[in-house]
Length: 180
Image (cartoon, rainbow, N blue to C red; front, side, top):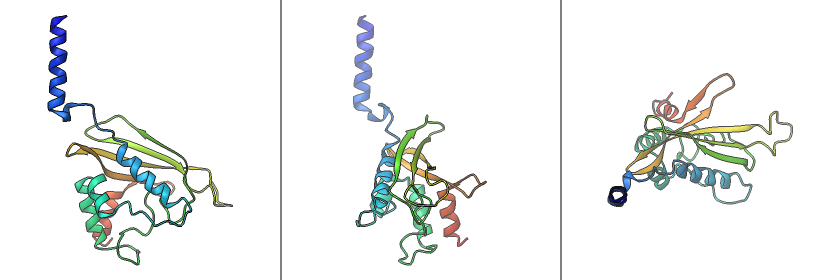
């Protein structure tokens, strides 16, 4: 019994001096923040648009690789008149129009090969009368890694056109940066 107590005390001491060895960081944390901002953007209120790729957010919630690719793509904006974003649509709702997001759920998968897939599901078209599948769920997959001891989004996978698989936002940013 004494050996178990000593081992337990040693484990507690090791974890207090090496916080990186403690429980894994919450992979859903950066996704929850992005989805909260996206919900606010589509709430229908006349508030300022929250840029989920704003400089401080980019450095805090996204991986360095994602941020570098975003900055390179931003040098060659697709269709944004103000020259700020390389995208001419909201990459989370995967469109230029949406309704207040309904039935949002965020679920974390099991970590594999240093990446945790976090899935966000929501309804984005419930207010669009006459739209087929207006009650359909939109699914966005976030690939979350740990960088400098904290969880960050390394890629966002959005659903492609019907019949296509998911599209990597990082791959899309490389194409935009290359003028494709």
